[in-house]
Length: 325
Ligand SMILES: [Zn+2]
Ligand SMILES: [Zn+2]
Image 1 (tube, helix red, strand yellow):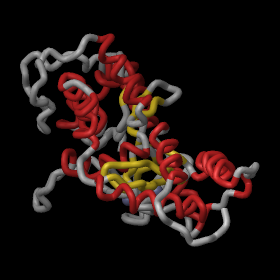
Image 2 (cartoon, protein in one colour):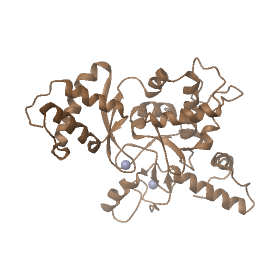
Image 3 (cartoon, helix red, strand yellow):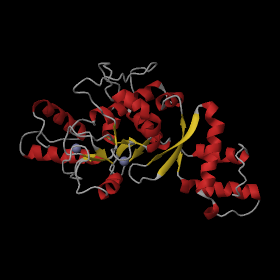
């Protein structure tokens, strides 16, 4: 694209925005062929994908942002926690994602989604095991609303819901939909977790909902943690082996971080960094193995799924807190 400095919002920006809306997120690499097609149509010639520059892309993002900001929309970017690829998403800059989801999903579906989020960030995110993901089996089990009508500590019940919850089929369908809509991603091992886009949109809501605000409280839970290196929310990566140490690092951030540090020591408490203490679904696998070891020692019954394993672990946590520390 020639550098005319023209940043007026026009049909080419509209076309690009439309392409953006059709996907939930875009990377620069994915945007290149779209821009090449737009520039080609505009200039009535073949436009090579290689000729699209990052500056073209940034200019389009900036112009679109100026045009959509009155509607409280904004294209924001974040890094993928595993690949570190920069991901762009059109996000709502004022309302949280839950509110947005409520416009296209029923109250019962939103209640189910909140139960899944509570499981991801509370049940499966304890001091011992920061899984921050949920197996398909565990998620589907949350289809029914809790029978005693007890809401989670964050008030999982949504106004207008029937209180009946969903059928298993409806729950499975809802999970599939939130994956298609770009909120959840499903791993090869069948764990659901939040996508970079969801983390970007839900950042404020997650911190508000799952972190204790009272700073004076001694046992205050900071369930949503940030990577020590890149300061983004971390739901998969590594943790300091010392349970009370807040240090967490994305796998890819450890590679960069430790090359500039002598030895591999926790930057906060200086304990040796094992690289085997995990955040994310690997913490669940880890937990299953420990549960298996415990059961073979006859100290615990075998864990059927990691929900059960976790409640065993949680029960044990009250008594002893350092058998795997
Ligand atoms: Zn990081
Ligand atoms: Zn530490």
